[in-house]
Amino acid sequence: MSVLRPSALTQRLAEIRAEGRAALIGYLPAGFPTLDTSIRAIEAMVEGGVDIVEVGMPYSDPVMDGPTIQAAAERALAGGIRTTDVFDVVRASVKAGAPTVIMSYWNPVERFGVDRFAASLAEAGGSGLITPDLIPDEAGEWIAAAEAHGIDQIFLVAPSSTDARLSMTAEAASGFIYATAVMGVTGQREQTSSLAPELVARLRKVTDKPIGVGLGVSNGNQAAEVAKFADAVIVGSALVRCLLDARDEAAGLDAIRELAQDLRAGVEKKC
Image (cartoon, rainbow, N blue to C red; front, top):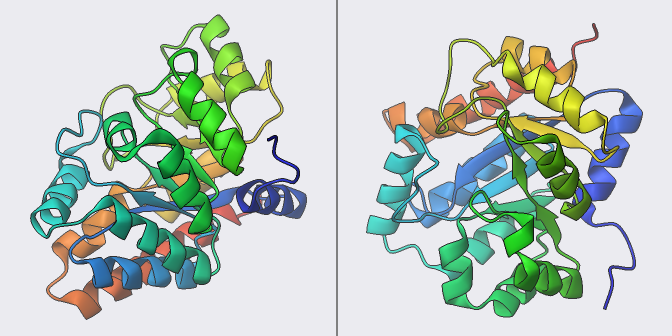
């Protein structure tokens, strides 16, 4: 069956666009450092001003993730995180007030069962799935399952993507298009990528769908830079680092809340 109404993600992005600002999307992995703490961390992130949450699915071979997210995933996996636990985190994130998507490599989805994954994500109240290693022309089974359960299909583009690839990806995507601002793996950077504005400009020529830019943003000033040309600013490693570097859970949650506040102030800056 086709989707009869926009997802919570699509609705929230439209509301934020109407406000004249970029959305703030925050990423944290499920189960890091524990299942309960990962839920409290997401709640703190939302309290701090994150509009939309990406829940990371920990995976043993995260080839596109940098050392910070890899370290968090390893801790979560060592703690016994399961796919069903990830859906519980999604449920808690939605309850906290944020449209929520999962970011996952394709292998865990396939192992769980493609239609079963889409159905479970929908049942948990999730809006979409980001698939960093799945391209639209190889995603027929996922697209069919996602459409059947009202789940957005969020695909990635990179500065190396051809114009034809950008057009095809934009056509296949729903929710938003994930534009990776730099080449290589994820991680905090001292400066935002100069390639990002050009990539977004190329996308604007082929689509009016929202474009989120990720990989590298770590503070409010960088968020403000990206917010000048993107519909959403995506932050991951900097938020994960708050927990990795904290002396205890309470300090980590405070650091996440404070960083989210700084990032939110950044996306709300008027040029």
